[in-house]
Length: 338
Ligand code: NAI
Ligand code: MG
Image (cartoon, rainbow, N blue to C red; front, side, top):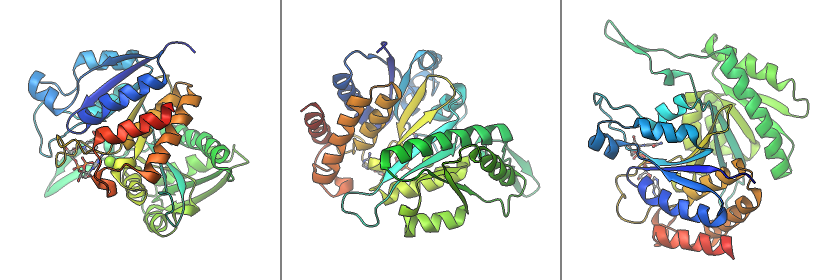
């Protein structure tokens, strides 16, 4: 296995608490990896005037994988502050966002699903302008971006089926009944691409209906492909169904080698500094990162260890327990290295 470099960007709040601990577990599971660490976020901005310093971006470009914690973003417009995670996704051209979620042990209904979210366009192009009496935001959808995300989703549908033993199944989620041009293009692009994968059962659903069915019967879904904003919202919904933000990982992938893994949660200022942040979302990111680097065996060991801790504890307060971040990490490490 060729040596690979992992960049750790802890960021702010609980990101800075969980990433160093998860990085140590990763180093134990894959001792040949090289680690570098870099700064980004609000604390970094206040210290150096930049939320994503050029040095961090340069390290990110050279890394094989990035483990990103979370950053705190001010809700009001702060001159000079730009969200480092949005900048990283754009600069590294990480156009696909994968968000898996599975039901907690013993929880009914059971589900194991993946949202493949387009990560480069839609309302996130951030083009807002004034009109008399208000503002307009531009929603950009292109055929090229829709096709490549559909291809990625189809490949994921095959992987997902291989792992779960279910049939390959993809659901295209959109709002083409109202957004006839933008989501119409997304829909037809996805259908065209999916037609090239004859083993995949393809269906489609309007986003509002998808939200309802995800709550009522998440087990009917396997892999969902959708546009950026809908994917953002629905993936937090499935995170909520699957035990909350403390358990939800995500991956940002592009066409090249580098990929960025981040928990879905933010910096959690309400619990930052208390030592009780749930580290399992970030440890699940480490599982995805290990797979990305071809380390499937330690990835499976870590995943099994996480599942054991999810089922049997110890649990941090968000899962109803009283354990600290450190105690949960220690338990996962013990199972993973046993
Ligand atoms: P949040 O995810 O930080 O917190 C929401 C709620 O979930 C809080 O009550 C928090 O304590 C809880 N929570 C989140 N992760 C947890 C964990 N691992 N263990 C236990 N409890 C956990 O979202 P919020 O409050 O909307 O945003 C806080 C800050 O984070 C904001 O500045 C926001 O801009 C930023 N943010 C950053 C993200 C990123 O870096 N990718 C993503 C989401 C928010
Ligand atoms: Mg979000």
